[in-house]
Every structure is written in C-alpha cells, then in structure tokens.
Amino acid sequence: MSAAPTIARPRLGYGTNGFADHPLDDALDVLQRHGYEAVALTLGHPHFEPFADGWLDRAIHLRADLERRGLLVVVETGARYVLDPVRRHRPNLLDDDAEAARRVAFLVRAIEIAEVLDAECVSFWSGVRPDGVDAEVAWRRLLANLGPVVAAARRHAVRLGLEPEPGMLVETVADALRVRAELGDPPELGLTVDLGHCVVVEPDGVEGALRAAGDLLVNVQVDDMLPHAHEHLELGTGRLDLELAFRTLAELGYDGVAAIELPRHSHAAPRIAEESIARLHDVFERIG
Image (cartoon, rainbow, N blue to C red):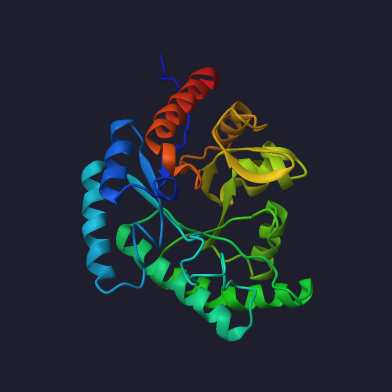
C-alpha cells in the first residue's frame, strides 16, 4: 500500500513589525514558544538597523540564533521611517534620481543582509507616486531603479518578492506581473502577496490573486481586512476567506513563509501571536 501524498503547506511566521515593543530576542522567544517556524524581519528600528556599524557581525550572530531556534527568515523592507524621520515610506523607487538612489541603496543592503541570514527572500514595494509625477514617468522610474536591485539580487543569489500595495503604483498582482515582464522576467524577481490586500484591491479576490502569482510566489503576508480600507486587522475580524486562501496555497504547492503582518498591534503581540497560530492550525485541520 503506497503512502499518502505529502501536501505542501506554508511555514507559519510572524512579522517583527508587530513586536515593536519587544527586543528581538524576546520576540523570537515568544514566537518559538507558540510553535512558529519563521520570522519576517523588518529592517530598521528597533530590531535591526541596516546601516549601523557592525551590521555584518549582527547578521552573522542572528543567523546562528535563527538556525539554533529552527526559524526561517524573510527580510521585510517596509519600515515607515527607516530612510526619513518625517516622511513615511519615503524616499521610494518613484522619486527623482538622488532621492530614489537612497531607496535603492537600502534595498541593496537588505539583499546583503538576506544573503548572510540565508533568508527566503527580500520583500519590497514600489511606493506611492509622488505629487506632480504622472503615472508614465513613475513607471519609467520604477523600472530604471529596479535594474540595480535585481542585479544585486542576482549577484548575491537572493530572491526578491515585489509586493503589491493598495494605493501604490504597483497595487495588484497584475501590476507586479507587468513589472516583471517589462524587466524581461528576471528569475530573481518573484512576488509577495498580502492576503488582506486581496480583499481591498484584487478584482478576482484572494484565490484569483494567488493563482495569478502561481509559482512566482515567494512570500505571503497574513492579515485580515475590510473591503473599504487598507487597515491590517486580526484574523477573523475582516472579510478575508482564510480557509479559501490556505486551500489555494496548498493546491499551488506553496511551502514558503506565511507570516502574520500586524504592524499596528505591538501592544498585544503575545496574545495575538498565540491566537493567530491557533486559528491557522484550525484552518489547516479543516482543509486537511
């Protein structure tokens, strides 16, 4: 009698941007205690300053710690004020040359850190179109500025995950696939899909978005949302069909990281981490 086929499932993780009130070691302790298998590490304050002196030694030490704990890692680059203390998420890849160069340098450093950590990928987004810049100009800037980022990923053998974000130039999976096609379909460039975003902007919902991403999917972020607002919510408090999402991931054979993404919930991180993984395990039980 042959053995039952093994069904692929994601490796459940939690984003450090949802543990902003914890030192990184304490956050990892909590996640390990609740059975998480991965962490999504957001570069910047308070957990990992990418341009600080000694960043390389810090990365080497962290890799050893993650290996000891048995945790996979994804590098996230969405910290609000990592490059500017006043302007949230700026500069971005759509700004003028001098400004965008700072974002490019940050993403290249993220790639260098990811190589040391042996991370699953570096996740990033396009950014919001600056005032006074039309969509065509913004698109050309995005493609031009992604050139050195993709080249760095190739040089360091690191995967990239371009994340569509509501309100940004690259807003949907279709937009991300267009970027990839216009860059010549570089193998280093995959996609990050935030399940909550699918409720807000994806015309074919979460199933359609995941199937469109297909085998280009390198990272999944997990949160709930309501259709009218880009606001990350605890699982079960929005309109996301969580069971459909994870059934689709299973059918796609996705076994990468799927990490809880709740950047405004640090005040209750230990409780939410415990409740979130329990809810996800319930989903896994229902879909087999």
